[in-house]
Image 1 (cartoon, helix red, strand yellow):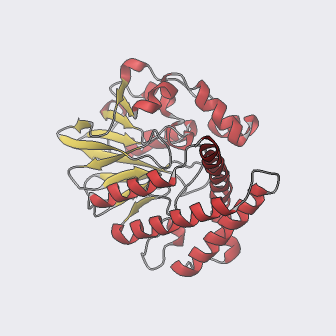
Image 2 (cartoon, rainbow, N blue to C red):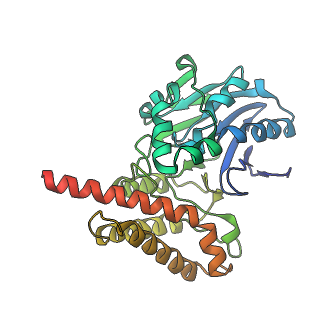
Image 3 (cartoon, helix red, strand yellow):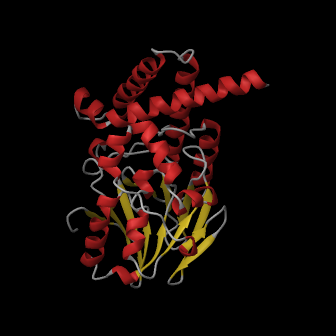
Length: 321
């Protein structure tokens, strides 16, 4: 295993994107007889890591046929324009709802600035480059592409975002789920036992859709699912049950947080912190509490933001109906 690369079976590898911290954000490679699909690409600063991983496999930029985006959040797709400029033969796949943001990323940049602030956004993501529309393949539900004879099938899996797809690799039967099947940090595994925690980050979190998408993924009966944060998990039925339980806990937290006033976000963060503490006890995580909360600090903040936005949409819908 080269530095920053985890090699799995069936020609699948995880490449550490080096986004924010080690083992936070995985880029996946599928290699089939010398041809490559890159699943998500993280941010501009991750592009050299992808190219080094290709060289470590004895391949170069010309071997990449596809850059596959599970969705267009910048920690998954921020480096797409820069990466595509390095790959002469690649086409980029994206959910139809995400195409306009890849061709013209201005609105994506604006929404990210709204979450992080402009200075923070520019420091982390840099200049987001567009992708030529002629190089884009839209992948609605049941779309397929073929990598050197190896079929990849796309499934519409909203819940985390409306422009989210998950990808079933027909050779292995495994699923690349982006953020739809939650996050799972490897430093918290206990004796090889994986966990998942849903991600409700802004702005399109939809728990009902998330429940349905989890059922869809589990119903495909994969032996393994690859999540972006961080890579391969197994025991999918058990993890799917945990996803459902935790999505219900998130919903209850959001509904009980009260009206959108100055202290609501603090209450949502406190509630998310309590959920993480409870999960630490349930899962038997061996890190100390302070270290666990540090691992999840960014997720607690973003999840709280997303839950607040979802609660507001529910209030607005009730007022209209």
